[in-house]
Length: 219
Image (cartoon, one colour):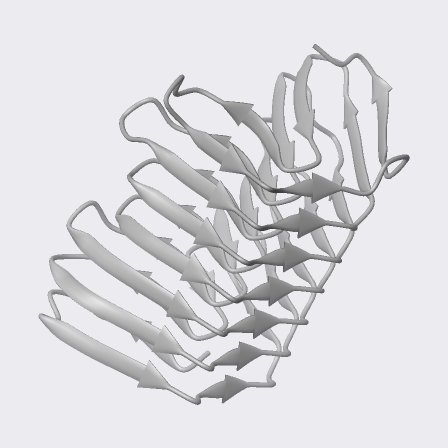
């Protein structure tokens, strides 16, 4: 939307930037920045995406598409209102988080849809694979996973937290409707779909009841 890639940018600040245009493509799309590959410190503050993001393949997020292992990301007071659709990883703020990240005072109200065989979807982040803290964030958009044939990881805040590092989620909530159609194993939660690390901390979070529906089989 605003920046394609911040490859090896040592320190980058993006402040009060807004995207209102719709985004389409194959993979790795974001409303503010698509990809943060390479080393570097990135702060995104008071930014927003209002455009719909619709990709035919893998990863997209309302603010960032994907982050890299060596990143140190801070997202403050940002929001997404655009609808997001991807085959596998779709997040309201970040599509796929591989680097260290802090997300605070941010929200998603856009509807999120995944339609791949192994979907990950979250109102804030679809999949987290590094030490990440999510504070005072919320999701009001619906999350819909269709055509899943094997596994689905769907959560109001994040779909899955990985094994490698502890994730902290505090003072967050989801009031968006979650619907999953999966004949295989579906891991679905109002806050987190699947927490893979036993040291994850989820504090003072809530999901409004009767908002989750699942067709076929839920594990």
